Length: 254
Image 1 (cartoon, rainbow, N blue to C red):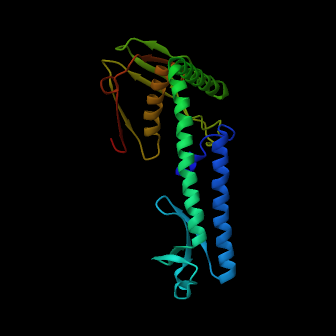
Image 2: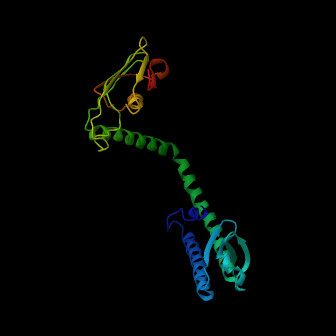
Image 3: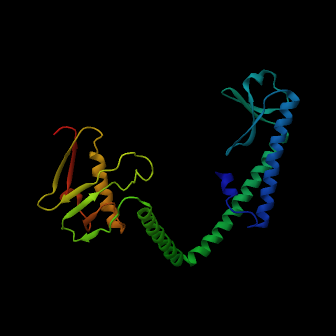
């Protein structure tokens, strides 16, 4: 994560930062080249590891621990491996860690400069973000309706305590257009009013009880968002209270 932060800014943003980055990459490349040379010279397996606490070090299988050349110092056994370093790797690691600290400081300074500039135009940027988000949502609604092979209608938004009525409602996910289903989706009607606010749905497993429940909920949410809905006709009250207006009981046995 520290290294990702060091390279968060694109190149050519800060000349000195680019120089330090090149120095860091050169030191790391030298460590890997040294590891390859050690492996070839001593005929052992040498891997380069890195942690935030220790930086770059070498990892050698524990099977070579009994005959480890003197060039490897600070050996620490960890499971099936021995973690160690050399004078050259230790020196290069110290330089690399200094490079990381310098890059973090420079990156932080540049980010703070951007934040200070952004704060001056926060209101305009926030309004712009809201406008883009609204356009993106409306475009998504329109594209979904136009690309569907089934009918979508403009819902009639009524008062809060009015009737909820959906004729020929379907699930918003158009499985037929996506090729996910070879059989046509059978539309369903829904009606709920203050004097008829309880519906019992029965059927065997996989008969579509949960799908019917989801389709009504999604149609209501889409209507509240300002989208067309997958139905022949729909009357949706504003801020419908699902608990009081309509209750679905889904069970396999009646």
